[in-house]
Amino acid sequence: MERIVAAIERLPAFPQMGRVVPELADPEIREVIVDVFRVVYRYRSDCVEVATVFRASRMFPLNRV
Image 1 (cartoon, rainbow, N blue to C red):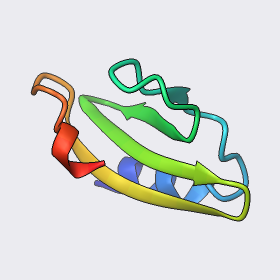
Image 2 (image 1 turned 90 degrees about the horizontal axis):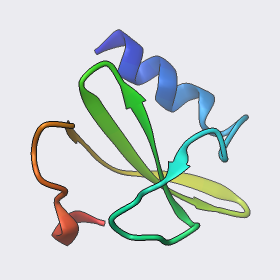
Image 3 (image 1 turned 180 degrees about the vertical axis):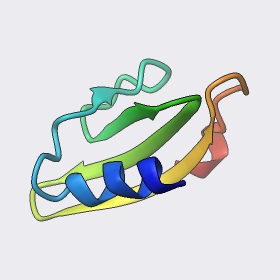
Image 4 (image 1 turned 90 degrees about the vertical axis):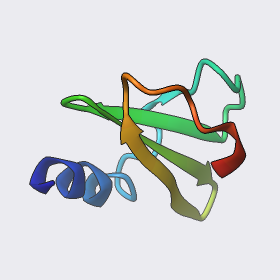
């Protein structure tokens, strides 16, 4: 949990550090991998919004973004 929180806290300073989510191909929706979790967030010019955090072994929750 601490690693996930640390990754999220870095996002405002480095919003483009994550990759574009392959399932969506939307440059505003990115993700960082933390251990076995995917932290999916929306990046806009003035803010970063965490959309979901889930185990990478599960299917992508398309209805959450």
